[in-house]
Amino acid sequence: MPHPGLTSSPVAFLGDFLVTGAVGGADASSTPDEVTALLGEEFAESGDTRQRLRSYRIVEFAWQRAAPEGPWDGLYVMAQAHRLEVPVLVDDLADHLRQAGFPIVEVAPDGLGCRRFVREDSRTGLLADENTGAVLKVSAPTWFGTGPRHAAPAWSREAGKSWVNHLVALDPGEREQWAVRRQPESGVERARWWWFLLVACRQRVPEGPDVTRAPWTELALWLVTKCRAAGVLDRTEAALQIAGHSLLPPDETVRMCLDAIPVSRAEVATRDTTPYAPEHLVAINRSRQAKALAMAAGAQLRRGVRDSGLRAETEAWLELRRTLM
Image (cartoon, rainbow, N blue to C red; front, side, top):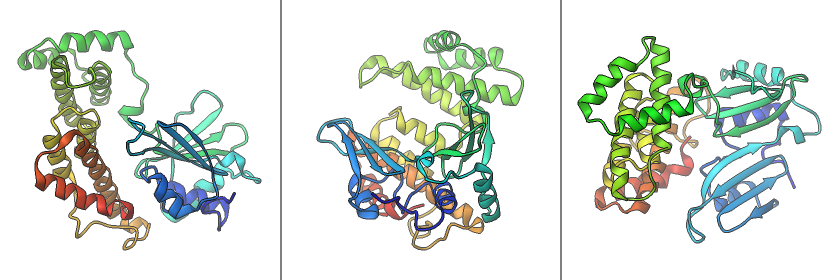
């Protein structure tokens, strides 16, 4: 089976993946049929009615779905660079990307013998052997990065559970008073603290539409606004948090996602119109935001969106999804 995209050197191939978050145009949002159309039918595949893993030698795609007959949702795309015949050194790859104007950033090591690097705009991460410097894998979306959301929490899981159990029983005024007394003075620590509370709250939100869910979703929404104020989340990320955890009714969620898209459909950058170059990075990232928000809105259609205008606008954005950055 071929290595998708390896028509150039392995360094160029991995560099392109880190910059674009895609292999041969296929990314973590691509459906199985879309990946086949882009990369071909020479692959090995395994899985069941709920999970699916596909391998093109060094490149892997994974999907899952909520129901046996439902649509497949992408989980990740990964390049297993350790399978290359000649190892790629992370220093060589970093130099290549720096010269191209898309440098990668090193974050804290994983403690298991690997160095970690990230390009946060494309949500790609890289693991390299700590001793040899050989690149082991590149994946998107990555689970590590920089900033408060990726820092190790300074508070115990038990403390988080206790705090949100207390907060959920308070009225809005009491919550504000509690926060004034409790939040750290340092801006950086405060940002980490609010994110820690949101994560603890998300873990407590019950599944389904049961009435017992309402107090927790209300608390989670309050914590999202606090994370925005603390600089942990921007408008796009806040909307994705709300949509991803179904904290609002479907129509409200879709309207919020569409309102947060930072560019019109007529002006959005696409792979057909905009090359991956540093001078286009603002337009590229707006296209990425549009894609993420459109997909979040699209997922809400399954929950039952009543407003026909919202449905039509969401579907129009989804028509563009495969061309967005």
